[in-house]
Length: 203
Image 1 (cartoon, rainbow, N blue to C red):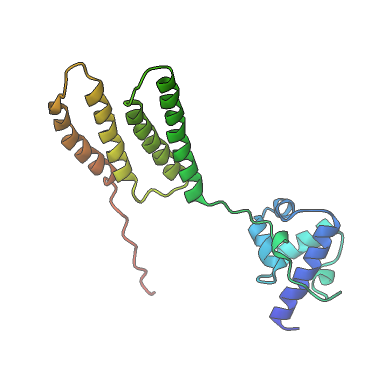
Image 2: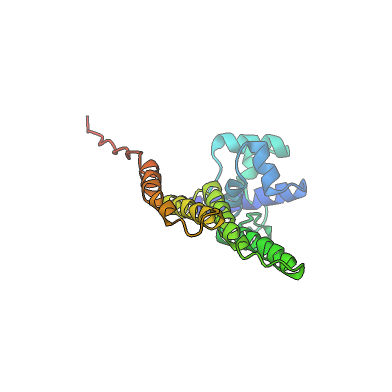
């Protein structure tokens, strides 16, 4: 039996045994200390479990290793809805969070407006809060390539808020602080020195 055929046979047997026990790919993966992505690859015939995992599978399903490697019926590739890989759009999640923050401030602005108070400075807080949420989420989802620029923008937004809320009108001197503050943020974000890859020498 060729390797590709063996992969398909094993895949068919794993699918039948797993579904026969009403187990999900995630549950089977947890039982074997593997991810559901690994189970999905095995069931698509893209890979085959090693000998140790085959032994684990045999014990789990109460069959022999030979049973797992022997054809019992024709293999059929699982349907897309049977592949239990749930993926989320990180970009959409971040966009929803940022728009949600802006919407909350817009609701507050409209409410105050209806009550007879027009407080446009709320949008300054809205901008700063949206930047903060964006900054947190790109850290959570490890999309930190532009993090230093987001932090610099956040610092600038805080200074704008202070500028418009100070008792003195138009204290432009406040923005003199912005230059060293942005330099500090930039240097702090680039303080790490990338490790050079070691070149392995042939013995």
